[in-house]
Length: 212
Image (cartoon, rainbow, N blue to C red; front, side, top):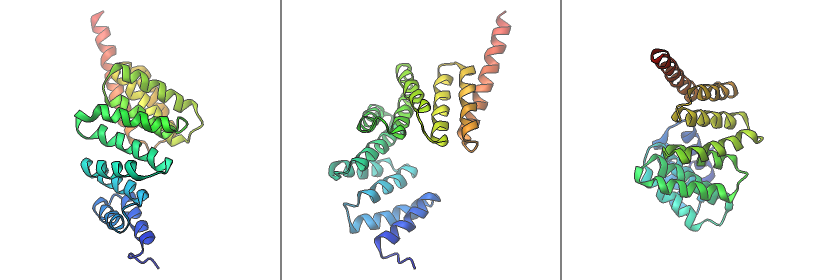
């Protein structure tokens, strides 16, 4: 029988809330666990996730920095850098440089961690810099060529398509979005991106025909 007063059981309940997007309930449970043991870094990382999904970026940042300042566990530190990169990337636009710094720190801790490199690629894409996009393409190509699970590879193909889309290389973008869909038919972003790329590709073809 689950007893909510016990930390592990309470964490299991909070995990259920987070996985099913009951974000207020998840945050409340994780907050109570963190109060009883402020050095439970695993819970603080999940609490940061719940804040991030609620777009409470300042609270997410506070918990992730706490983990970075106190944890001695390499995996926790790596995750905190990765999550903090996303917080800075999705939050205030003034933090784009901080986002890149955190993403690089996280990926350098373990270069073989392809999820960390995927986060780095996303942050580089979000900077809207052509030079950063070229770096993102290198990261994504390395992920695709490695032995990763299909869902992770699908995300990499999707981000690669976004890079080509932003470079106005719509035919290449279409190919990569289709690769993503083939690997993960449930990746809805890839379908939306493919439709957008298809529209731009057809417009570019029409423009060329009109010019001639």
